[in-house]
Length: 77
Image (cartoon, rainbow, N blue to C red; front, top):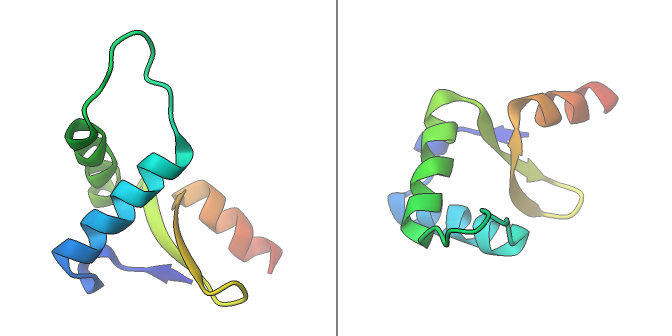
């Protein structure tokens, strides 16, 4: 189930984005990118609709997925 970002508090959204970024351990190349810059990149992707917040009722977890991946999961259900 896709959860609208607007339904989360600012603090909850910030925490979700930070957890996602640190969990993924994304490599940004030679230059170290500050967490705040990574958070802003993900936030913009959420605002544009490229990334969505997804709740999985089976595992009772929340994650961020690309809209395409989220759509693919719902198609498989």
